[in-house]
Length: 381
Image 1 (tube, rainbow, N blue to C red):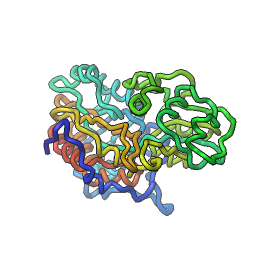
Image 2 (spheres, rainbow, N blue to C red; image 1 turned 90 degrees about the vertical axis):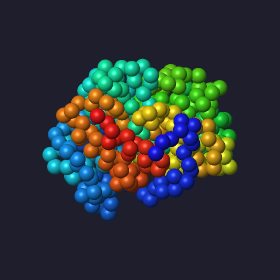
Image 3 (cartoon, rainbow, N blue to C red; image 1 turned 60 degrees about the vertical axis):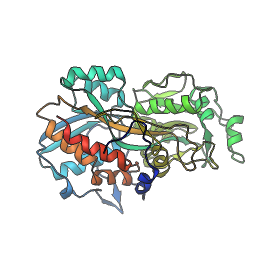
Image 4 (cartoon, one colour; image 1 turned 60 degrees about the horizontal axis):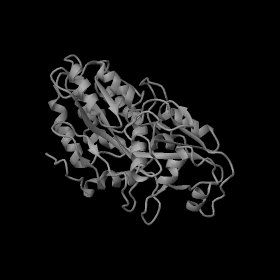
C-alpha cells in the first residue's frame, strides 16, 4: 500500500489498539535474552503461538542493539521467535538509540532500534556499511513517554508542557512551586526539592521528549530538539530506561521520563498532561495511539520515518509519544544474517507480533503503517 508523505493516519486504524492489560516484563538493565516472560496468575505466558511464526531459513545468531524503550517488547518477541525457530539466537542489547545507531553504522549489528529516525548524516554514514544501499527506518512499536514521579500523598499529579520544561531545566525546583500548585488545586504539595533524573546515555526517548517540549513549550525549552544527549544543566543522570525507572522508584521527591512499561513495572505514579483539552490526559497506550493516529509519513521509498504531532489538543490524546524504528539496510545486508533478519522482522511486524505489544503495554502500529512495513521487510536484500 502506497502512502503519501502528507497522508495522515486514519483514526479508524487505531480502533484495535485498545490495551486490555498492563502485562509487562521486568524493566531489567541486563542485555541478555534469558529473562523470564510476563506472568499471569503465577504462570509464565507468551503472547503468540510459536507455531504461527515462519522461520523462513533463519539460523545462527543475530546481533542487534539500541532503544531501551522497546526492550520489554523485544524480550517478548525474542522469546517467541527463539521458541519457534530451533537453533536461532537473537541477542538484543538495550544500550540506547544512539549506541544502537553507532553499532549499526560500524557494522557490528544486523539492525538497530531507535526511538527517532536516522538523521541525514547517519543515513550517509550507513552507506559505508550497506554498500549498495542505505539504512532505512521501519517503525515497529509505538507508545507513550511517561513522566513518572514519586511523591508521598500525591497520586494524581497534573503538569503541562511549560511546567515540565521548567522542572527539567532546573527553573522549578520545589514541589510546592506556584506553577505546580495551580495545576493541582487541593493537592498537598510538600516544600521539598524536586529530584529530577535524566538519561546519561544517548537516547531517542530524550530526543522525543525534547521535540515535545520545544514544540509545546517553545518559550521555556530553548535546547536543541534533535539532541539524543541530555541538553540541560542540573538534575541527576542514570543509564537507560531501567536506570531512570529505578531512580524514581527508589527516590522520594523524584521525577523522570521513560517508556510507560518501565513505570508500570515499577508501580510508579505517572503524570497526566494538561494539553488544552477539556481534561488532563493520562499516559496510556490507548491515549498514545490517539496521538500517533495524527502522524504523517515523511520518509520516501522504503523509508517509513514519521512526523508526530506533539501539540495535539485532541480529547484523550496523550502528546508525549515515541515510535521505535528498527533500522536495517534496504540493500547490502550481510548474506549470512539476512534470512534471520527478514524472518525476525517479518514476525515482529506480523499480526501475531503486534498483538504482543498490547499485552506488554505498548501501542501496536496503525494498520496502514503496519501494512507498508510488511511489504518492505521481504524486499530487504
